[in-house]
Image (cartoon, rainbow, N blue to C red; front, side):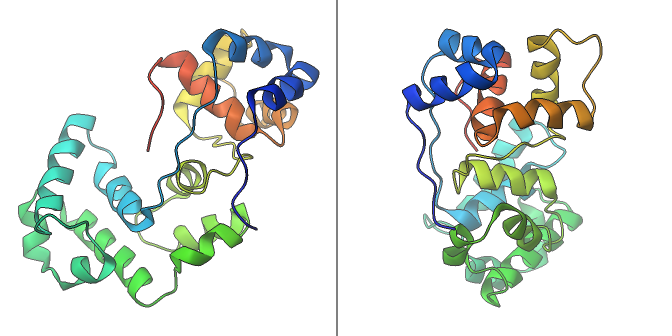
Length: 210
């Protein structure tokens, strides 16, 4: 499947007015849907691995030191592969994340992940390819679908921000389980990404980027 066109504000409001008036009102309150595409696929995935289970501040610091290893160029699968584990450890990466970055690089170098083919795969095929890399789980693959491929029908049910916003928006007494999130997402289909994005904006006024 080729890249999807981002729907217009009119199309979005028409859809949600018919399917979910609560979300439609949130959309009117927050304003236009804005989603930037990041085509630097390898670098996006490097950053996602580096950022796992550490604070935003620590992730920025380690990412900056990691980028400095490439003399002003962006990291590529080939250049990361050529670095020793010791060099990667020196920028603050754990042994585990060093192994993850090397495995990611291997998938790109050996072409088991072909970046130019990803936009032609369906969502589950992209998730299957990306999660074959050690250190990349379903949530990371879903963020890639949203922010790198701009797929419009992604519902990251394990995302805490989405869960929290749904609880607030629909006035639920407790955090929604997977079944309830899927039920909400069914109303949003085929614009589940749009609903998710507005849920994130409900919690944080800053535009989400990845």
